Image (cartoon, rainbow, N blue to C red; front, side, top):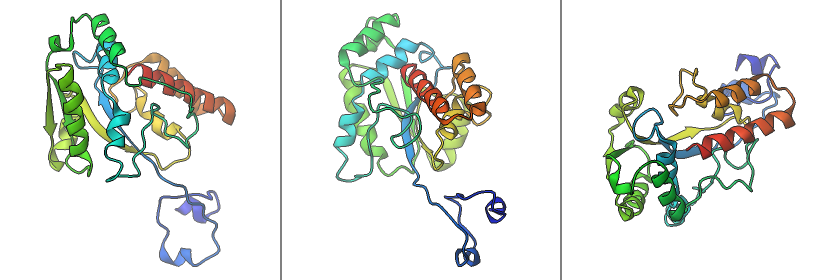
Length: 239
């Protein structure tokens, strides 16, 4: 706020200004916030350390259909194959990602070295207690993963348990939401750097680290946005 008052910033949304400043002639630009929700696969925990297992689980889940079925209750939820949401730099409409494809799911699980999903060890899906549409998502996950005979367990966490379990790293899949109030996609993507202390994706990928480091110093908007798109492609396709 002090930088805004000194004229160094035009935009400090979503921060609240002191009431007396709202009555002055300070210029302020408001930006819309977006929260991205996703199933985060812990790539450091077996069997999800196998990329083909992660891809198979992604291909087996029809997220687009899940959201269509809860549109009436939560109309602002939007499906995207992209990790970068629409309206943020680096987003591409034509990006396909790991769209629902049962045949590809079977192909991936065999590439992972398993005859079928039933041969996988139990995979636990963790959900926090404060998401209003949580139970709808859980119901849909039960439907799709039961179809393929996946051995899985749904764990509903209490509010005071979420941080402890998440920080422990002792989880397979975590349903999380990430606020993206900044216009720049960098603030969303930086969490994937292996040296980021607040990193939640549990990823160790030198190529992702290199691209994020390039984003930090690239001042040309067009080239930086291309880096964002490349990062988005790697992050999604690596599940």
